[in-house]
Length: 302
Image (cartoon, rainbow, N blue to C red; front, side, top):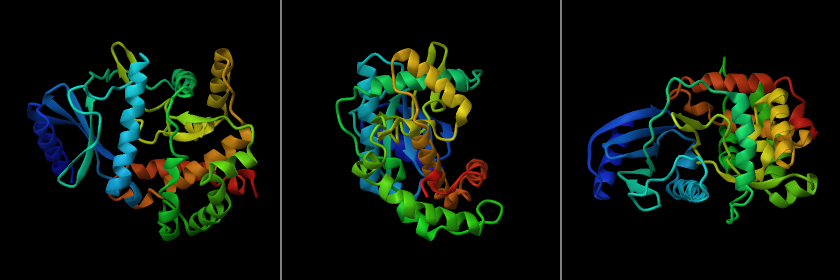
C-alpha cells in the first residue's frame, strides 16, 4: 500500500503542475509522508487508520479542517508546518487515496524531544487557537470509538478480555458525555472549551534549524484543553499550568483531565486492529492501557 500511496501522490502532484521525478518517503506509519522532489512539497497520504476515518467523506472533511487551521495559523505569523502555496488549499483524491500537500522544511534530525518546552508551547498554541474564528465539530478524534469498540476483541499480550469488557462499560458511561458538547458542559460547566490541536501538540512538532514548528493538525477539533494533555501525567500538567498562568490562560481542570485520559485510552484501544500493519503501535497501546488499569473506573465518574 505504501508504494501505491507514493505513486498516487506523485500522480496527483503532477496533475497539479508540480515537477516530480524522485518522490522520497520521509515517514511511513498511519500516513505516508513523501517529499515530492524536486518540488518543495510534501504529500501526506493516510493509509492506516480505523475504518471510520478512512471513509472518503470523513477523510476529506478531516483533512480540510487541518488545512484551514494550519493556513490560519500561518496567516497569524505563527510557527507551523504550512500548507503548500503551490496547490489549492484542499484535499486531493487520487487512485483511492485522499491526500494533502505541505511546504517542505528541512528537519533537524539531531534534535531530541523536549517535553517540558513542548508543554509550554502547547499553552501558547491554545492561546492562539482560542481566537480561531470558525467553530469546529465537537471532539472528532473520538468518532471512531463507538463503531470499533463493540467489535474489539481481546489480544493476549496487548488487550486482555477484562480490558475489552471494561472499555465497553466505560464507553457506556462516557459516550453520552463525550458525544455531546451540551452534555459535557452540563457536567463540567467551567471547562475551557475551544479549538484545540487534538493530538498531543507538545509531541507533534517538526524541529528545524530555525526553531520548532507545530504540525499534524489532522485531529484538530472543538474540545476541552485537557484533551491535548492526555497521557502526559501530573508533572507535565504542572508545567502546563505554570506556563498557562504566566500567559493569563486557564489551567487544567483535574477532574476533566481524568475523563480525557480515560477517553484517550479508549481511542488508543480501538487502534488495536491496526497493530499487524503497525507493530510499533502495540507498545503505545500497552503503555496507555497499563496506566489505565490502575485508574478508577470511567475516570472517577462512576
